[in-house]
Length: 393
Ligand SMILES: Cc1cc2nc3c(=O)[nH]c(=O)nc-3n(C[C@H](O)[C@H](O)[C@H](O)COP(=O)(O)O)c2cc1C
Ligand code: SF4
Image (cartoon, rainbow, N blue to C red):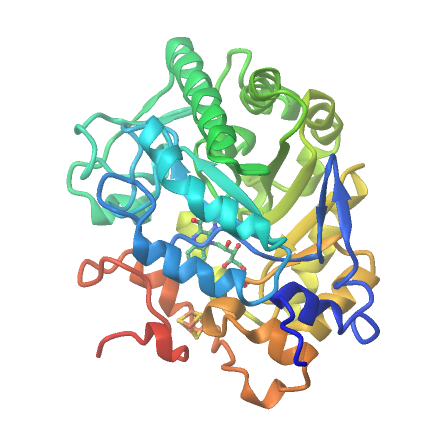
């Protein structure tokens, strides 16, 4: 009689070849089946009201069937006043949580942990799909790349009332994630979006309690983490996506800025980190897959990990299991994400452990999927190599 193995069981059979990346990982009360994850990737397939759609389910089912231990749903906006793409996920109404329940339950029943990334776009949003208000930023400093796309683009410095309101919005959204059954909530605190822009000396020039020293710049994030942990209790894992270099020269944010901040975030309730790099105005670095860039990024991740007592994940230019294995065994990170490599081939992990490497559709690292997000011709993200999402000519 032929046994049917689940994707995770099939992947686990490769443990002798990939002992580090296929090892389990316990964080709080959850155990990830392996150290590989699909990081947040906004493919813009939600319904126009921000609810989970059949198209997004179909897309993510491909990832669930591909054998990673964790998938993180991307960019669920915490506020109706912060929207970048009309078909991005949202998480500020009960219906947003309700629509996700079945998918999360089914995925987690197969052993794949589902996380939800909560997002406030800050100055990297657009006024196009909101009510035209100025975008919220720490000090009014905007992103020129977004400005070019939005004729009405304008920003303003947040008041204390704005900070309190956004903190409440994050808490309310985190509770909805909990209602939806997610086991992990990830706060997007990198890449120039609102929480990340407070951490960076380039975008945060405030002279009040939220600006100045590294610790003062982290105050809003620490308050958000503390408030969420208080509201959701101890059962859910709280992760932070955090920057290792925004490539804004000496004014930008580096791991060193987080040395004293990371323990404070952990004490406030953070259980894991994901290192990330670049902001909207420097996202071209995502296409620079040179050995020099890879070496530099790995070094920055390792520094961040050195400041952390909880697991640190990382996604950036990883093309498959041999690279992921080396990153973990070299002590650079505890978990490895692959966004573009898994987008290019959802079955990359299974094909690798089953010796079918020659069948893998390999990412070209051209960054075209990323550019689709800002291309007015497209309302979703496509791929150059994956036949499932082939970009129209
Ligand atoms: C099309 C596209 C959409 C993305 N959307 C998100 C997102 O919604 N949230 C986020 O934190 N990162 C997002 N990212 C960044 C990825 O999570 C990842 O950090 C980056 O692509 C580097 O990893 P990779 O080299 O494995 O692709 C996106 C990347 C791409 C290419
Ligand atoms: S569009 Fe290009 S960069 Fe993006 S996943 Fe496909 S091959 Fe890779």
